[in-house]
Image (cartoon, rainbow, N blue to C red; front, side):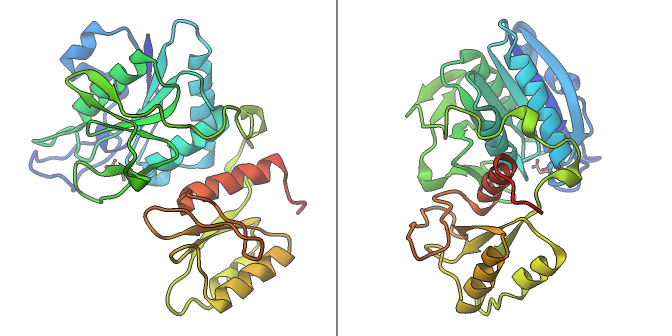
Length: 312
Ligand SMILES: NC(=O)CC[C@H](N)C(=O)O
């Protein structure tokens, strides 16, 4: 059996006019309504639960914790082959990476979404949801996977790469794990999922939004002078991810400000604003986030701070 957890997003969105692909309200239809609109799902063994109903731009820590708890509870049931989550596309890659690092699930947890509302002439949600259920039921590759527009991505590599196109997701460096073709899964590689053990167990996730570590992202760019870092230090911050240029390079002023933050006990991680590629680690430079995107490096830093907090 597959359990579908609804969280909202465009896949549950509706517009007044079928030709309107952008002027819609996200998170309007319940997960049971999404399932009812897909006739082939009537033949599948399914259970559905509405966890929240939101636009994923507003995803927050408390919802992440609740979602992780619901996923874990369903995965622990022997009759459940896998879990599907319907989500908004905007922060889908963050939720995917968070769940992978917190649960490191031994069964598939497949996240899917849509770029067009349920009312659109060419809505993509129903096919994506059907494919996600098929992938979760197959159960061959465990871990958090993203099923979108016929492609299967790992939580670690997936990124939203287009703001409008229906085929809006890609794996960094082009390495998608597989494809769904007419209900058949074709695996290209059983891609490595980061860590078989969760970095931080569910019980260690803070209850309220405010007790999570404060981790912010700053950017290197022409004229980056470090004033954003100074402002964050003045306000209070536990961790900083910098999205550097190229191979994680930083202007003199930004690097100096980040080293000052480090001196003050703020944990710093250096990623790249490039769409793909590794930040080379070196003894002299600030710590590298490897090939993680800035938003995923932020999750890594959040979880690192939860597992070994800096005294405030
Ligand atoms: N295509 C989408 O899902 C984006 C809609 C919305 N902003 C969300 O992320 O929930």
